[in-house]
Image (cartoon, rainbow, N blue to C red; front, side, top):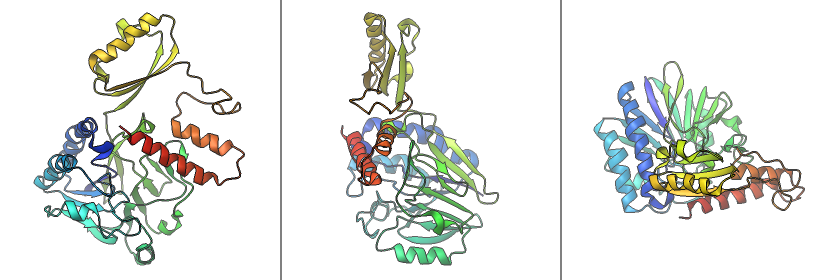
Length: 350
């Protein structure tokens, strides 16, 4: 039996941005639901952080989520097993109040999983592990130790995996307590990574600049063969354009309509030609446009004389490498965590 696994959908993200939810809808309309129909999938595992804000959600975003996701799954007869993630648990030390229980009670096809639980799907027993906190940690570890399940799914913060592209998490739980399972699939980190047994499957779409050119989508898992197939989202919100005296007459700007674009100038011999290039993007209706000229991070006043920067690196990978190579005696992992939190908050400012 084939089942769909999806995680970290973050409905209501970017303060309920209509732009981003229109972008989300392209994925559901063009990729997710057509794949469910084509594969005859009747079970979906949602590994947490279905909603973005653990304390609130605006009514427009909730209506959007129900009309474009939950109503459609109900009408298709699809059963959804949903674990609670850190973004859907109101309290930080327990999962007792959460958005899944409170907002989705009218759906008989949704099975909310507040803490640890086990369910058999397609003849395979799954261990469902919701967000681990102070209140449920001891009980969760006991249940995992006793479990006879072959596959575990959850919303886990594990040490040694990529928290986002270019940065490996150096805090969280050690993975050893999960080694008893044949496969472990988890959400929480938005980029894909695995060690052959534990798989972070990543979220369905780009939310921040850090996600540019990083594969997104969902997965199909075969409960009989254990085959895992990624179904990539072909749509992108963020785009890097490299300008090298690019002829504006030959430049097709239509694909950037409604997108967030960054132009990185490598060579600009004629400012007027560059202005015409920019004008083409504004004419098609680019949503947001940033221009970076003189792309040279290697200046001592910025990052240090010995730190070489690639144009392909993102903001957080640059910061983390700079922190790692610094000679500070302060705990570097704490500095990285602080900068990561500040960066995420900065991205959320509209």
